[in-house]
Length: 69
Image (cartoon, rainbow, N blue to C red; front, side, top):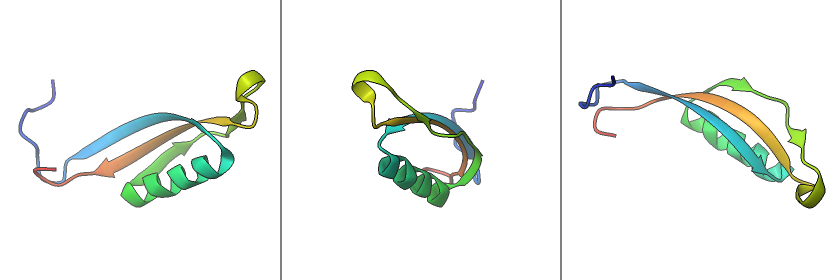
């Protein structure tokens, strides 16, 4: 069970399934990379039907946090 008290230089692992337009996914990856380190980036999968023109992508990122944040 995680500690209730934040630790200095604690880290957080995030797993994200992002859905959006190509440019939106590129922008999201840039923002996540600026916040931490991209661990795994899946290939964007095009969606079909009513969501045609959009993509789904898996992204795993490691983010360092500071005490109190």
